[in-house]
View 1 (cartoon, helix red, strand yellow):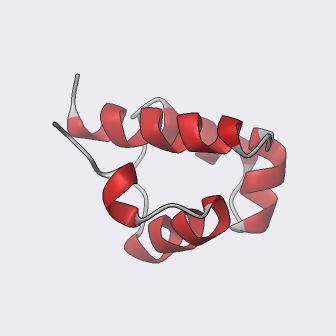
View 2: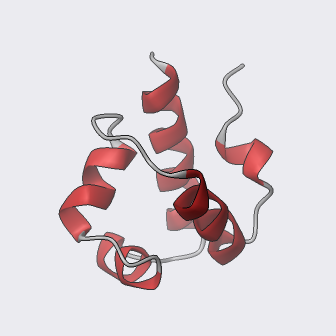
Length: 69
């Protein structure tokens, strides 16, 4: 699994733990649902600004999202 895929998988995992839909999270971080879906599947990059915002919304440390081990 690539690092982008791992990052996306972690975002999806924590999004679901917060009971947020892709639409809800995408709206909160000013992304399209389609772009967020591509991030969650490792097909698109995410800016550091959006990554930190997502971590804040999901109430997890950024390191939990980028845990590649």
